Image (cartoon, each protein chain N blue to C red):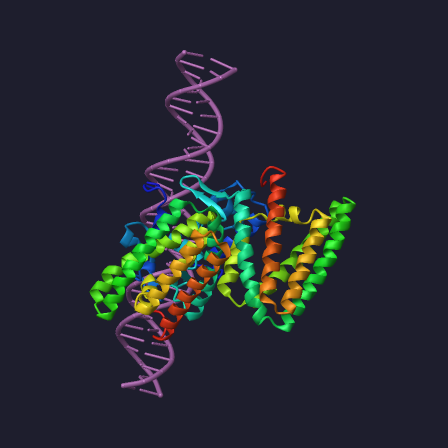
Length: 236
Length: 236
DNA sequence: AGCATACATATTGGATCCAATCAATAGCAT
DNA sequence: ATGCTATTGATTGGATCCAATATGTATGCT
């Protein structure tokens, strides 16, 4: 019974990776092959191959006779990754400026509208310490932010660049990032303003200004996350 | 008899990757698990895991019921990769400028001396169509060039950046690149001059100038390789 | 009680097994 | 001959097996 699904291993790696990102397999925890095999109703063989892929992508660490451990990046790792990400997305937007279509700009504008509206709601939720309203709006924050950045990367037309940026995101449990980025009203509005500046520059097709705005935006977000992590003693 | 070597799979992936880079498994060729297993005197299991790692790193492509194929990047892929590499090494040097030690600058200066000397010999070899002298000097070209760029990346102090740049190099059979870069005296001297400019800027600790020189240098090399490939109908 | 040692169990890692799929060849009809 | 079909052989892919190592627990000693 070789392969019922098209690419089982790839799909397993994706699903496991997603759950790491979601924090369901927390940083530092061990991934037992037998348990994963049972969970996904397959044998250990494809699980092992999926884990090797995640290892190659830097999501997990493989200790010789001990198995796979979800990596727990420290402040320095995050600072390094954001430095690189700022640079790559800076490149992306400087390329995108030349090739972006009006339709894509429109998508960014819409994403930005949703982003601003969500930030407004999150700000209110934060002010009233309304955890429920907060949780309800975080997915919208993620969606509109991803769309905004995604359009830029797509418009850059560089597939390799896209792949690298995507891989950079793996390995950081999203929930912790989000906590840092969606907790404070002032910082979130700062984010909105940065997006606005980016949107303005790209609309004017001003490559160098767009790049500057984008790298600044990402570096600032990175600093915020690092600050947040350090102020509460590490990730996890 | 679990694991005699510390990390068998990793070592296999490295060795197979090296041979791909060396062109011994040429682009487009199929990698048969059984053959590899025999070659490295192991069973198919660790081979399969190593192939999964290489797949995750973008060195090979995994077609569902057909196995692994060495990727054959086209001109566009190479252009994309060099665009990214230029950006990443640009970032690396702008960071390195701040942290580089005198000892590291000295290492760059030495590498540059060897590089210039080797280019001189290669130029003579090219002028006299002396293929033997050419082949004899290419390893020196590689070594001094790698050292030059390696010091910069090391001095950047960003490990993630280093990892990314290393992975970017995988998947391009080196021999073809080298052919493009070491064939013409004028281009090689241009390369030497670019290294000189980089060295000057980094010695003066001029970050923006160093970055400009580095990105220019790499973009130019990329163009040269693409031109070379297109003028002889694709890789391999 | 605290600590070290020894044993039992759990887990990994390579080898092997077999079904499913693909590639190649041979056979057949047009 | 050329093109199509069927069969054989090669190869992949998931499951299973067993040895080696690590982990966890119980036992004995100070």
